[in-house]
Image (cartoon, rainbow, N blue to C red; front, side, top):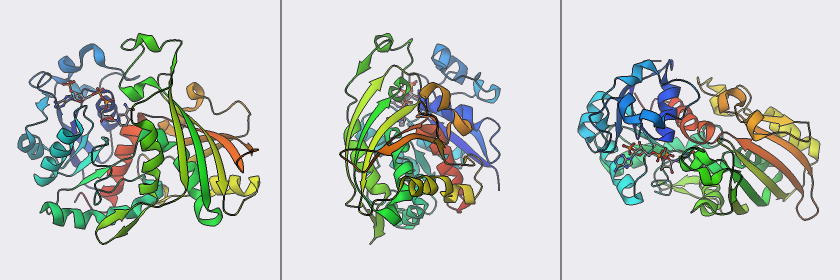
Length: 359
Ligand SMILES: NC(=O)c1ccc[n+]([C@@H]2O[C@H](COP(=O)([O-])OP(=O)(O)OC[C@H]3O[C@@H](n4cnc5c(N)ncnc54)[C@H](OP(=O)(O)O)[C@@H]3O)[C@@H](O)[C@H]2O)c1
C-alpha cells in the first residue's frame, strides 16, 4: 500500500487527539497537517492543545511541532494532504459546508461528525457491516463535480455496540424489534472529569439528539443503494433511551430483542463467534482479529475492564438470556472514542484505501 499524507481537521479536540494518537506509526497513513479553529491556528500543536491533552499515551513527537492551520483554509490544508479526517464542534450547517468545501477541493473527507449522515449519497459505514455502501461514491462525485473528492462518514458512537451484535442475526432470524438503553461515557461529550466535575458520582438521563440517532442511524446502515441514493431499511423497530454515566470512556448498552424466527441461544452465540466481516477478510491494519467477543462470566463485559479489548476496536457482549417481554436480552460494550469515533474513522479510511477510493 502506498503511504497517504493525512490531515486532521479538529485535531485539538477529544476525537482529533485520538486521530493524532492513532496515526502515530500507522503503516499506511502519515500525519502531515493539523487544523482547528482560528483560536488555535498559528500555534504549534503542542501549544494549541496545552493541558487539554486527554489521551493515555504522550502526545506523538511528530505532531508536537506541526503548526495548526485554520480549518477554513481549505485550499491550504488540501494542498498538504491526500485526505482528511474531520471531527469539529461547529453548527451542523457550518460542518456540512466545510466538509463539502474539502470534497470539492478534491480532498476526500472521512468524517466523525453527524452533519452529513443523512445526506442520501454520503455513505455511512461500519466496515464490518455495510462496506458495500461505498459503491455510492461515484454518484456523490458526480453531484459534487469532483474526480477524487467525496465525503464518507461513520455512524454515531452510541450504536457501535448493539448494531454489530444484531447484524449477524438479521439474515437468518430477522430482527423484528429492539429496545436499547445506553450508558455512555463522558468522553462522548468531549469531556473529562476535570472539565465536567458535575459528572462525578452522577448519572444524567439526557443526551441531546442521541436517542433519535440511536434509533434512526442503524436503519441507514442496513439500507440499500437505489438510483444514486442510500434508502434506509424500514425495520427493525428500535426504541432507545440514552443516559450519561460517570465513566471516562466506553459506551455500554442493555439490549432487548425479538425475532421473526426465534433462534436458540446457541445459534445466536454461534453467529457471534463466526461473524467474519470484510475488515477482517481484508486484514485492515486497525481491524480487530475477532470483532465480537462473548463473555461467559455473568458480570462481564465491564466498562473499565473490557473497553480496551483489541485496542478498543472489538465489541464485547455478555449476559445473553431469555426475556419475559422480548425473545432475548443481553448487554454489549464498545469504546466510544476508539471503535465509536477515531478508531472507526481510521478503519473506514483503511477500507477506502484498500478498495482504491483514495488513490
Ligand atoms: N467524543 C466522542 O466520543 C465522539 C464520538 C463520535 C463523534 N463525535 C463528534 O466529533 C466531533 C468532535 O467532537 P469532540 O468530542 O472531539 O469535540 P471537542 O473536543 O469539543 O473538539 C472540537 C474541535 O473542533 C474545533 N473547532 C471548534 N470550533 C471550530 C471552528 N469554528 N472552526 C474550526 N474548528 C473548530 C476545535 O478547535 P479549537 O481547539 O481550536 O477550539 C476542536 O479541535 C463532534 O461533531 C462530535 O459530535 C464525538
